Amino acid sequence: MIILVSCLLLLLVAAVAPRSDLRRLSEVRLRHTWLVWVALVAQVLVISVLPGDHQTLSAGAHLASYAVAGVFAFANRGLPGALVVAAGGALNFAAIAANGGTMPATAEALHRSGWQPAPGHFANSAVVPHARLSWLGDVFATPSWLPIHSVFSVGDILVVLGVAVFLQRCTRQSEEIAALVPQG
Image 1 (cartoon, rainbow, N blue to C red):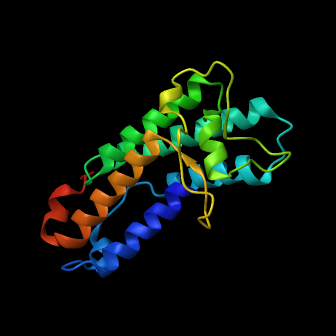
Image 2 (image 1 turned 90 degrees about the vertical axis):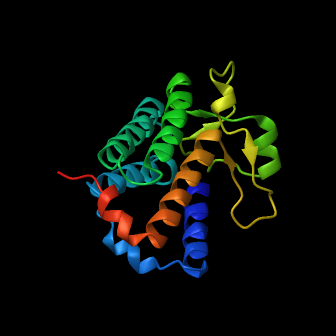
C-alpha cells in the first residue's frame, strides 16, 4: 500500500513540476499492462479479502504476484527506471521467498508504524522467527500518525525511486521516449 501511495504522490509532483507535462505519459507504450493488474489483484485478494486459513496457498499466491510483476518489468526493461523497479521487486521477492512467502519485518518497525495485519487474514509482512535476509525485509516505518502508516523495505524504496525516474524522464523528454520504448 505504501508503494502505491508513494507513486501517486510522485504523480502529483510530476503534475506540478516545472517543464513537466503528464500528457506525455500517453506517448509511452507499456507492454503487457494486464500483468500488473493480475499481480495487484492477487495481492489484494491474498492480503485483504481471502481468509488466512490457507497459509501455504496464500504464501504461494503472494510469491506468484511478484513473479508476474517481474515478467511485466522484464517486458518493459527498456523504459527509464524499469531496471530500478525490477531490482526493488527482486529484492522483495528474495526476502519473501527466503521466508516462506512472508516479508520479514522487525518488531520495532511494526510498532513504530502502528500497522497490524487484519485478524484472520494472511500477514504479508510479519515478524518471522529466525528470518533469512532480514535486512531486505520491512525494517523501515512511516509514523503511526500518518493517515497511511505502514512498514517498508529497501526493495520498496527502489521501486518508488524507479517510478520517480520513469515519471521524471517520461513527462519531460517526449522526444526521447520513442527511442526508449522497447520495439517488438
